[in-house]
Amino acid sequence: MTQIVRTIYDGYRDLMDNKSDPRVNDWLLMSSPFPTLAICLSYVYFVKVLGPKLMENRKPFDLRRVLIYYNLFQVIFSTWLFYESVMSGWGGHYSFQCQPVDYSNDPLAVRMTHGCWWYYFSKFTEFLDTIFFVLRKKNDHISTLHVIHHGCMPMSVWFGVKFTPGGHSTFFGLLNTFVHIIMYSYYLLSALGPKVQPYLWWKKYLTTLQMVQFILVMIHAFQLLFIDCNYPKAFVWWIGMHAVMFYFLFRNFYNEAYRKKKSSMMLKKKEEKKLQLDESKKQNDVKENGVIYANQYKMATGYISDSGLRNRVFIDNRGFQN
Image (cartoon, rainbow, N blue to C red; front, top):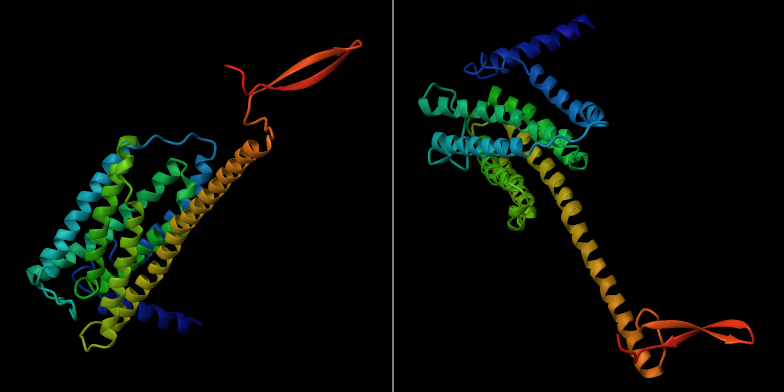
């Protein structure tokens, strides 16, 4: 047993010390995956258990101004990350077909490496999306998709920065930061209040954009299974399968949030139309058969005395003036 543990530990140390990119080994949170894993697990515990319990008997926080500044920051941060990925590679230096990782100290390669680390760091700032839901008691917004997406991403990106900070897989970051520019712009406008709401009809298209993003990542990653490229196949599968997982999660969310809602609205319209037809039929019956419905005509009641007895009668006053 001791030998097995020793073998596992030696393999782990060899992976961390000899197989990783030495340029990032001393960077914040890069020496070991366990601090990142601990932060991710703490996030999940807080948003699913501790946070809702702490807020159970408290009033929701009014975070409107905080949300405005937070979303503005995320728009600016995402724009800068997108700019860095373009300028350090995807703006013309990188190949969309096959791009190995440059582990040298070339200025552009180092710039891309720094951009990858900041992209990794951005995944922690996105935790606030869910934390704000908890503090505002919007627990119905904390979906399985939301928690899995935010909870997995820092750990996933950590491996990319540790072993392949640059090259083919950074295409994911390029697309993701672009999508986040649009997404956080929407959230920023939404936080401005009711006056802006009529202009936010395009919300569901954000989810569509997310799904298109993952389809492109799948195609871009899995093409290396058929092309000879000096890029680790393990990361081809790592990125590709992440894209597959998130695509189906987002598609399920889209179906739940929009298609079922659309079906419900259509059913409601059919029921309203049926009620209108029934009402119209009643009115036609009145015209043709002289049938009186209390909900269509004004009615009056009176009492007639007959040998000391009071009999209640209904009087049709359709011809009376108001």
